[in-house]
Image 1: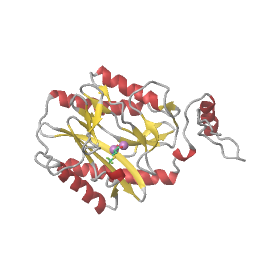
Image 2 (image 1 turned 30 degrees about the vertical axis):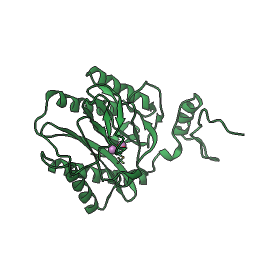
Image 3 (image 1 turned 180 degrees about the vertical axis):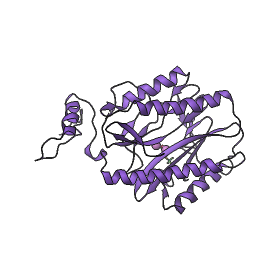
Image 4 (image 1 turned 90 degrees about the vertical axis):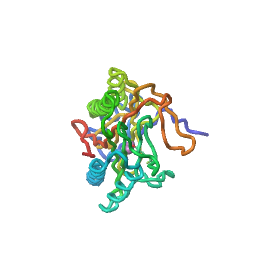
Length: 287
Ligand code: MF3
Ligand code: CO
Ligand code: CO
């Protein structure tokens, strides 16, 4: 016979030990049918320390990109900056060879939503908006963050989109308190994007991170309050809303099978941080 897993009882108490305050809280949600984390999603102090150090290096990588990015360079030049700096500092760029990804970072210009592949033929032009997404492995721990860069002068519309995307990350993070749900953050992001005439990409989400590149939970950016996984202290995850100037629909380039592009070719912007859930809310590990 097959076991139906309709309501996964993710949280198991340690047998023979009294229930902790955390056990009691999580069990009360689980018993109401909520999706709760598995115990391995709660990081140990040693793991948090390792992810924090990976985050510090990842921030230095993005700072290095910020210092050297300029009009006329190729996205492959950005990849070289990321690759060399990371290796020199004892890290490994996580994207390289990840599920067949060929480069060390993602570079996503204008209508490219995410997962753009650095390319010698792709030259940064004045007015472009570009997301550079870096993930660093240090001593086996992962941290993931991305930023937008504006090349030269751009249009007011593009400036606004970049700013709104940044605010969406901020409001999404502010909505994450201990014992709230992924959907609470998603609802706050969706509200802010819509108030500003923008849309939220629905087909890609943030993720748990730290011991691996992509872990549970799915950190959705579009949705309703109270849905998705319960967020509890000790969890580490990204928030990385992809915000479109036009419609929310996207497609994946059928030639490279990576590049995600807006269906209507409108511009898209994204900012990402890796966060630790603490007793009082999120702490950024990629500053
Ligand atoms: N860094 C991306 C993220 O935020 C993932 C890129 S996967 C890659 O989750 F293979 F394209 F690098
Ligand atoms: Co990323
Ligand atoms: Co990510």
